[in-house]
Length: 284
Image (cartoon, rainbow, N blue to C red; front, side, top):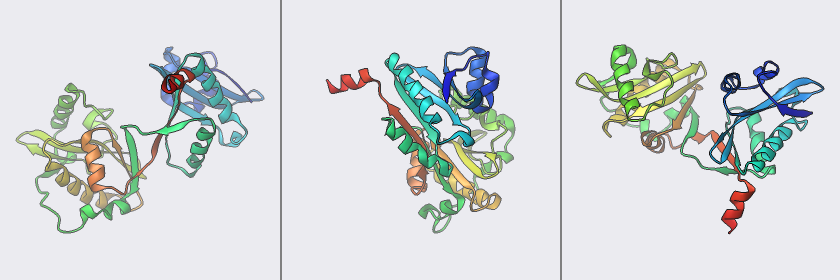
């Protein structure tokens, strides 16, 4: 197997092996490094990384199933490691483990000298059935009559709330609160007059999973009401085996995970291999 840099001239051969954002960045001539893997001239893998400060971040990494366990993944990673070393940069690899095959990633990275680190933005997952078993949902339910679904609101109210959050640098959902992936039946709000005071937005990009994409708690007492109301709607609409996914992107989301779904398992992981110069500085 061989590796080589991907450019606009050979992008067509590797496009299907790269994430869309990587292929689009190459087309636009953005500063990223993309490697192609070939076996006897056949494109069978690709990886792309962006240099951010002193860290080379791998955001796309794939080897075709029929070519795995032949050393191609290691060859791609070692090529990036040499590139990072020449630039005195650390190499970072992040992934979300959702399939059994992802269990092979930790030993693969560990053998190359990577170390797993904790990050602020962690994705957690559990099933709707497991969610229902949370102690939070036991006992008498509070009155949630003041909670409304997105479906019950005019689009204008959601757009205003989204712009308000974006103005203070808190825009966590591509397409905003009226985006095509937003589940308007399970996403809920608490109003203060004609304005949205608190909200909980869920997205469903595929039929087997539901993601808690954005939480805004205007008042502390709103969050339990929002989640209770949303949970009732989720149970009506989705099967018990549907995966429920939540990403901790702000203090409200962190508080929700710790208080409501402590059984949620982290499925996103970040591994880093520091540059030689960075290790030397620490040892000094």
